[in-house]
Image 1 (cartoon, rainbow, N blue to C red):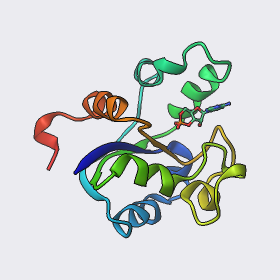
Image 2: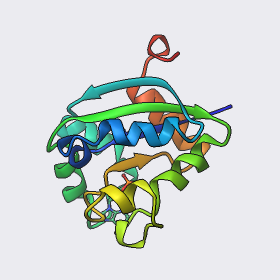
Image 3: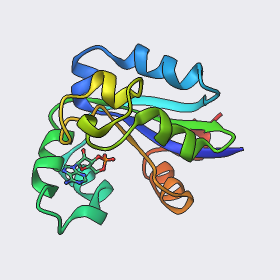
Image 4: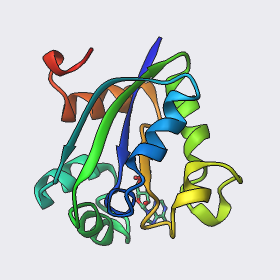
Length: 137
Ligand code: CMP
């Protein structure tokens, strides 16, 4: 069993897509091991996305991620990291395969509905960023 971090971003929360997105995970073999809704501060969003701090899109990314609440989850299942990325589709929704979350629900590369960990190492870092042991079931 593997765990990965998923964020339902402010655009999808605003559009009331939380239930539909969670259904995609649950219907495709991913179990929710932890979940919460929160509003990130600029400092938190900057720290979470520190890996992108030198990229030209960093400021817009942080501004967007603090524009409203997000829902963060730990998804668990066999090959959870790859499975989640397959269900999300490409970062740019215009390139995402039909039937993926980003193809169906996202508007642009900046407002792309969901985030998912891209590796085992980053999943561990991202999970511990948001969740304490006692919040994981
Ligand atoms: P995410 O998977 O959350 O990781 C970083 C985010 O930066 C990404 O999704 C996009 O929403 C956003 N972003 C904006 N422009 C780009 C870009 N050119 N390449 C990658 N990510 C981008």
